[in-house]
Amino acid sequence: MTAVQKPRVLIIGGQFSGTFCARELKKKFNVTVVDAKEYFEYTPGVLRAFVKPAHLDSLTFTLQPVLERKMGVKFIWGEVKELNGEKKTATIKPMFSSQMDTVAFEYCIICAGCNFGPFKPMGESLWFPTVHEEARKVSDWKHIDERFIEGRRRHVLEEYHKLTALNKKKATILVVGAGFIGVEWATEIDHFFPDIKLTIIDFLPRCLGPLPDSAANYCSEYMSASGIKEFYDCKFDPKNPDFWKKIELPDGADETYVCIGVKASNYFMPQCTLSDKGPGGGGWIHFNKHLQVVKKPTEGGAVWGDGTIYAVGDCNLGCIGEPPNFEMPPVPKISYPGEEQALHACKNVFIQEAAKGKSSPPKLINTWWPWGAGMFATSLGPHDACFVMGANENKGSGYMVNWWIPASLQKEIIETSKVDECADRWVGICIWHFVHHTPIHLWGKAPWFL
Image (cartoon, rainbow, N blue to C red; front, side, top):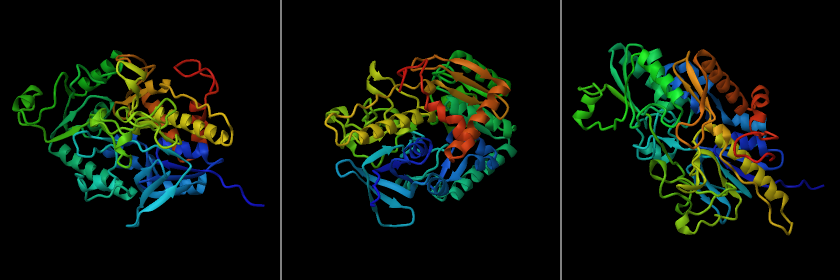
């Protein structure tokens, strides 16, 4: 008897959304996951690793053993150079080859994420490894190859030793951006390197800009008590001497860390699908309410390819429509909504496959603004934190429902169990499966039943 050939699914990106899709689709499809680096990294916890390098081991694992041996899917360590929607092929440069490979597919889910650091040519920051070939050419740390987990570890150690030296000389550090990344980074440095003098600034009138006043005040009080100087309504203008005088650093800072903004990294996508505007100057993938990739409005906005290519999570534009009349308002670029969108895309792949050979078109589900996109856990060093939930697209929305040591423990549990799930271990899967596979929705913008 001839074995039935399963349809092929290509997943671009092997992090939160990518591993989620692989686990969801592996039984019914031949799944291939491609990632430019060899490892998974829990990005929300990586700040701790730079001040405590041993912590990196609890945030990372190599992808090949998990994806191929445990999940039973194919893993390609390489960079996608081009995605062809008409031919339904991806051109991939494998890690140890100078030649390009072509991989065909029936369905594709893009889970490629994004970069940070809008002031860098291709987006670069400590919080995300520099792994793309062209980005490495203009990198500030091109001597380190972060496509390897050992290269990432060496970068972490290098930054740790730099902070150690700054601590010995009782240096000054300026943190630009008082969002949750900037606040976490400042408070992590303050705890592990107490002799460093810290200053944090933001263009907005307070820290944690979009979150409720209760969380902003809690974090501000912590920083004030720790001796971290705060300056708000303050534009970063390093070439202006008056700027440095305004923030009480007339001689400048010994080191500056820019903790603002994201930047798209969808280099493999055709320009007709990428936004002209958006965070970091645009370059985000346009999508419709089914999460299918579409052409930009100036190109007609039609579905790109044949509707079997999806973009989920941080790589897409994050919103549908134009302000102020959004069909779906901007979704935060964090892991939870990425995984929620990944579930919606997977369900639509199942629906499309089941509809093959039928006369009626498939009835795809619509995505929505996930209620979990309004959950934010902000660390204040290893022993304090605050947790906000119920936030939405409106500024100042949400409620601070947990704080101090209980919130810090909650964040540790989330981190440990989430890494466990992504590594396809049963404890993490048991904890997190029904977070997205919710049979009935009692709140949020989802339909009651899915």
